[in-house]
Image 1 (cartoon, rainbow, N blue to C red):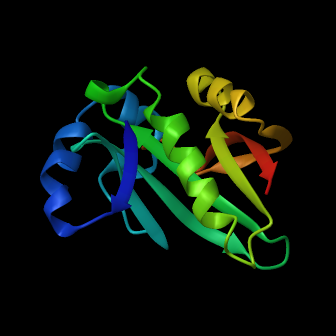
Image 2 (cartoon, one colour):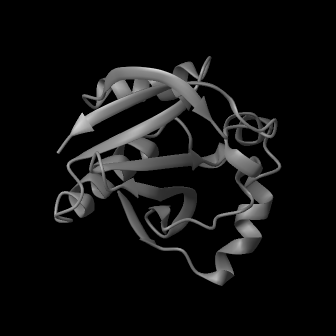
Length: 146
């Protein structure tokens, strides 16, 4: 069973261990090491941390929340990201200023694109994201209305 909880300073050690993974370094901003977002949660499988999901920002003009996530190698392919996204959707649906969630996914990240479409997110545009360790890169933007 997957749950989420607030990120705490004690999470830094397992985050540093997870961020050594080449997939996290490739697809996430700052290689997953800096988690300084508006709101960040640890994804737990039972009691073991397996990833992070974050609310990066909320665009007050469009009422869109920008959400990102990553899953450590030991938690992949078990449903952690989809469970976490559903839980964050449940949190954000109660936030009056949020009407949709957007996922900025680096082009070529087929696993995240498949996850987004399986959860009902729709491709809305192309743009850039600060994904990976190379700065701003081409991205696709998926959105789900709440």
